[in-house]
Length: 117
Image (cartoon, rainbow, N blue to C red; front, side, top):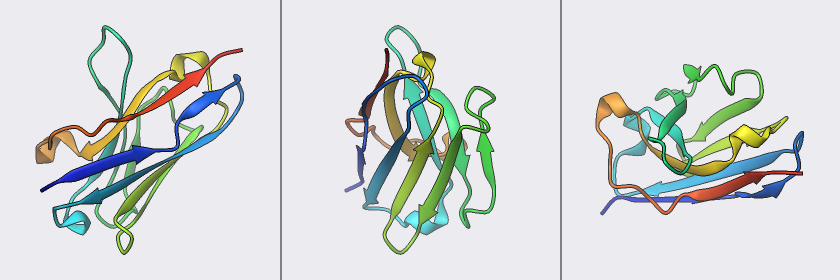
């Protein structure tokens, strides 16, 4: 059974930082590109970063490029997202999942990030 467990969210002021973590189980993690997604109320989930199977190929959405850094640890089956210089528009629920082109699993509970002064 596939499980995706996101953690690390919280409330920060603009300019602050957070590091999110995603623990996965139930599928051969190392074989798949993994993405982080962000959802705000009333909108579709947005792909914000995709990290390739070796961790060397990482694609960032324009909105987060230069501020967010993704990494993966295949031994620990985790994907991390370091978020710096946070902006109010980064507020949302963050999810991890396989890269969309590989087919999505059911979603985890996500982790809430709130950026507000």
